[in-house]
Each structure stands twice: as structure tokens, then as C-alpha cells.
Length: 629
Ligand code: AMP
Image (cartoon, rainbow, N blue to C red; front, side, top):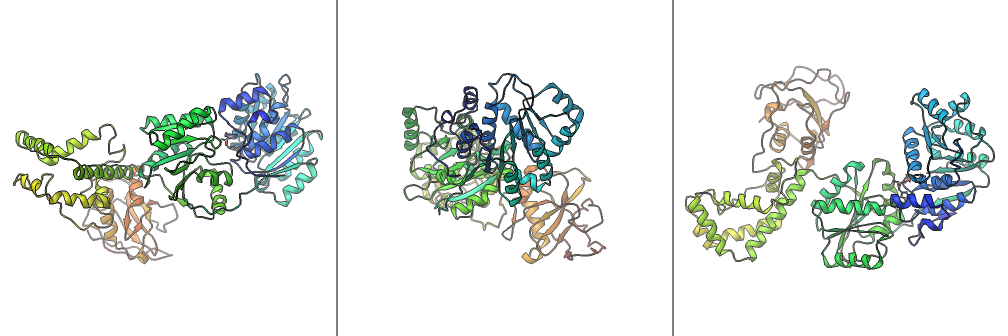
């Protein structure tokens, strides 16, 4: 059977699951079965063998775990189900999922067993008795051979990620285990792909299996511009909020998560960070649901965090962004989700968060949407601060253009005279006051934020400033000796690429700090000169010339010596610095990447740098240049 996601799918309660399991699903906030769950659960509950073609992320664990749990006799602490997984990580993850779904099954016990863990610990745990074993094939075989594990009472055997087990060379162990379990068992085999070997195993060991496969979405060309951001779950919220801040043309966002609980949790977290946000999930009555949508339309809220089902049919023209905070089960669900933006002829924007293990979804989605999904990196604190400064600047510019400020000019002038403070200082203090609730600088942004803003002033923000400067009455009132006042005519200086007009605070490194070799992605072929690299690093990252060591130019990259163990923030800046339009993408050079037998050395004092008297033995010749400052 080939299935496609049914967005009108009924709830879990229609699948024949027992109350304790339904209760657990409600607790974890699952709203509706995923397509693979809707298809597999009834088949497995009916006792059929199953051959399922499904990837991680489709919800396959619950698809086999729930029916298996339903058949467990809690009174008998003997292994009644065995789940084989290719890796120890997956074994632990599956065991945790079972524990979660069995939370209303008192006395239930699941034991993960895998290679690498102490045998003594496992033998002790096995002797205490357990209902389900989740293990890697090698270790399960060991225990069967030692007779520390007996599977006479086994009812269910699940082979999870069978193609991975094949790839990792476990297939013979798997066959051996299949041959040493009761023939009466029910068997479910899940695999992301179905190579012939797996099919043959299924043929030999499964009884008239029902085949279930998630239909890959038919290709749809979408008008939405799509990006993805690879993050670990611990970073996701930070990445989301930073991205929301720096995205262009942000009006309103629909954020998709998997569970009801997650809608509420994420909405709460975003609210705490100052967003106007509401959760939309299946627990809301129709009336409340409509209220949320109305508030989104009216602009009283800007973000709705929803599950797929709750957002069904939502059509709000101002949704500029769809954020796939949790990856969808399949490409069709993805296409459905991103269809909620780009409404009313506007171009929409879709952002997808992927954990490293979910990266396989990228290709599938690109194929389904016939569009490249561009990579997005988490904006640095500096970038966020730049955006805040630009927005703040724009606000000021707008106020100057639209508000009558005569009274305030007088107030400022009086302050200048009476307190003897410059208008620039007054402006800075007012800026502080105005942004106290939402500081312009993020922690970690340091001093480079306003500097970057200065180097790339928002186009809209610069022109009106000149208008403002032209106001004759305002200029005339400025004190003639106030060269540094806020009304000082702005001198337009040519903005150099990646350079700022405001000096960056210099970072200090300990005398004699250990140096390390870093790789930067610009070299001779890009026409770069060592002095440009030094200049950019000194100006942009605030690393003094004395702390910059040897620079070697190769064809398409270069190496540069800098102090070792630079902070993440600084590395972030170094990665993003551009020289001749090329982002340096600075990273520590791996051992062996640079064929140089000498240890990194301390940077010699500036001005005392000599061409070294060594020659690189093989490989591309470094273009040695004496560094100029
Ligand atoms: P899996 O493909 O089994 O690794 O599951 C991927 C993720 O989806 C896990 O984090 C599950 O907790 C979650 N999940 C599975 N089924 C559902 C569901 N019906 N509703 C919401 N989340 C689910």
C-alpha cells in the first residue's frame, strides 16, 4: 500500500489503540497520527507482518512501538518484543520513546542493550526481567549465545533501519537472530530504502507482509523563496529569534511544530522574548481558533505557532514567513505548510530548521518543490544588533521627517547651554533611554555592531539624514563651536568594502600567546595581497597587527597565524569578514592540511617580520610576501 499524507486524518482514537496509550499520546501532545502511523498501527494491531519504507522523522518509531506495547502482558517480565537497531544511539532513543508511550502502563520495563556497554551491567539488568529489549544485532546475538537472553516468549520482532544494518555489515547477525526466534512471532521491518538484499530477507522471514510506503510528493513548483538552517535542537530557539530579527520584509509568521505541547511552549518562549504570539492547536475550540486567526489578520499578533492540523486552511495574506521549526513528516506536508505564505500575490519566505540527522529531507524537498533551498546560518549577535540599529535609525529618520519637533529643539538647545553637554551626548543618552526595554546590542555583540551598521547604512536611512542636515533653521541654531554636535554635517566618506569608519576596539592577547594556523578562503587566484588580509582582520576583528603572524597565499586559499583558541564570537566575525567580495570563512587548519613541519610560532614584533628561510617541501608553493601595514 502506498499512502500519501491525509491532512484530514482522524485522531489516534480511531486506530484501535488502548486507553493508556491514548492517554500517553495526549500527554506528549501528539495531535494526529503521522501518515505512516495511520497506515501501520491498524495493520500491526491486526497481527500482520509489515514491510515499511520510511525514513527517520516520519514517526515510524511510534508506528511500531504503540501496537507492540498494546500486546505486552505486564504481569510477565519476560522479553515479549525485540527491536533491533543499527546503532547504540538509536537503541537508546527507541527505548526512551517506548518508555514515554508506556507511561500509563505501570511496571513496564524496556532495556536497551548494545556493544560498548559493560556486559556485567547488562547481565544484571537482564536477570531482573524486562518486557522489551532494544538492541544492536551483535550484542543481542552475544546474549542469545550465552543464554543470558531467551526469546521463547517473543511475540514481536522489529527490524528498524534495516538498510543501515545492512550497510554496517549486520545483516548476517540479523538473519541469525531471525532464525533463533519463535516462528510464531509478528515481524515488522522498516527501512528507508528497499535494496534487494533487504527484500530477500523480508521474503524469507516475513509472513505475507503488508507493504507500506510513504508516497513521495508530486513535484510542485512553489513561488516561495526557501532557506534552511542546520541547527542542533539546543540552538533552535536562539537561531529562530535571531533569524526573525534579521529577515527582510517580515510582517507575520506561521511557525510549525509537531505537537500541541510544543505550540504552547514555543509561543510562551517567544512571548517572553517580546513577540506578540499565540499558539494554535487542536485543543482550541473553533471559536478560539477563529479568534487567533482574526488577531493575526488584524495585526494584534504577529506570530502563530501551530500544528499542521490546526493550521489547515489558514489563509492570512500578511503571513510573510512560514517557519518549519520542526521538520514536517514528508514533502507533501512541507508543500502544504509553505503554501500558507506568498498569498495575495506577495512573495513568501519559507525557512526550514533541520537537525544534522534530518538533512536528508533537504534533497527530497528540493526535488518536490523543484527549487534550490539556500543555506542560512544563524545570524551573529553583531548582525542582529546591526539590524536593530538600522531599524532604530529609520525610526529616528521618520520622526524627523514627520513630527513637529520645534519644542524639542529648544529643550535640546537648553540642555546644551545649561548643562554644557554636546548634542551628540544628549542624543546618545536619549537613544539609551529609548531602547532600554529592548537594547540595541545583544549580549556578545560587543562593539562591532554599530560599526558594521555604519559601514553599510540602510539605504532608506541615509538619504533622509541629508534632508535633515539641510534644514537651514536647524543648522543656524547650532552652536558655532560645536564641531562634534549632532548637527555636524555628515561627511560622506567612501565606504570601503567590509571596513568601518569607526575603529573597532582592539582585543588584547597575552604576551607570548600560542599561535595557531587558520585557513581563509581567498588566495592568489583571487588577487589578494597579504596587507589586505592583515588590514581586514585588524579592522574588522580588532586583532592588532602584532597578534597576526605569518600569512601564506596559496592558489584558492591562504593560511594566517592568529592566537590560538579564539572565542566563538570572534571566530564568527572572522568567518564573515569579506576581502575582495570573498567571505574569509576562517577556520582552524586541520593537522596535516598545511605541509609545514615547523610548529606555529609567536608572532614577531610588528615591523620585524622577515621572509622565512624555509621552503615548503611539496605541494602548492606559498606566495611569500613581506607583510606591509
Ligand atoms: P521518528 O520518525 O519515529 O524518529 O519520529 C520523529 C519525531 O516525531 C519524534 O520526535 C517524535 O516524537 C515525533 N512524532 C512522532 N509521531 C508524532 C505525532 N503523531 N505527532 C507529533 N509528533 C510526532
